[in-house]
Length: 321
Image 1 (cartoon, one colour):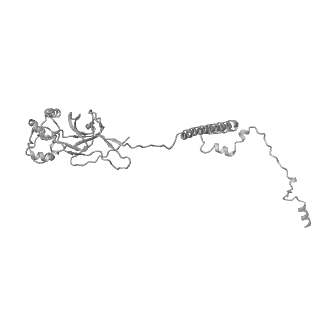
Image 2 (cartoon, rainbow, N blue to C red):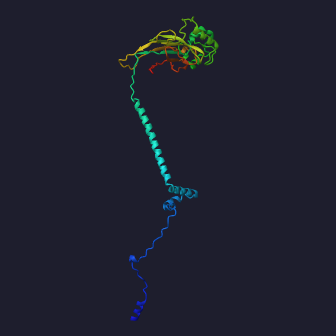
Image 3 (cartoon, rainbow, N blue to C red):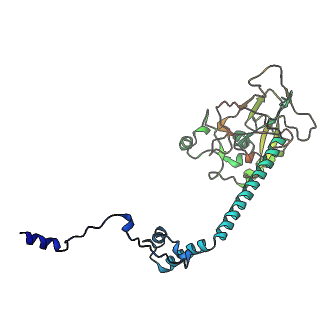
């Protein structure tokens, strides 16, 4: 038993335990290679991954990105120059903006922003001229009494009155209309007779009102002829305060500025015109109304102010500058 123990003691141990004394540790130093190309080695793993991302699978694009990064590392002065240039451009833009803003402020404060307006109300208002024209041309009864050869009785009075009822007012036993006329057409003989009645001074006063319209007003009203180009015929109109060649002063209205008025009555007119005496029996007669200058004759063919019979009209006139 002693021999065995001796045998075991003489054998080398299966495990050798080394001391952890730092003095006994042999340090292996890594050999640092000299930097051959610092620019190439400064590309970190993150930059490398960005350069060769999954989206940049085109070789030409990868090469271009890598080249740009190399240029940025190799030429740091170029990026600095570009930053300086951008700063100068920004300073220039800000300077131009400040210059324009200062010019605008100078112009803005050079002129007053508040205006003083002096409104004067006239003490005298010159009245306009008023013109009324009858579209019925002439009184049909008067015309047929003067020219019976151009008129006739309706072939069927009942049918005529049903179709043109406004012509059948009162006694229709002596009703006369234009002879053999189509609707809306006037023959040459009727036109010549109308011209004669307009310019003749030997008209009979015992056969009724020739113009089939009577105008009364608080001012003087006189008749004047107006030529209508649409029908090529003169129409007798009645005008108030019209002074074409008489040399008279127009009517005026004195305005009282001491007290405020809502409305001032300029003129009033009353028109009387029998609807059944229109020469053009196929259309209902109406009156064309116009307001114009006292020194200019108005063209009623351009006016669209129609006054229907049996109505009352109130016309407001406003002063405009």
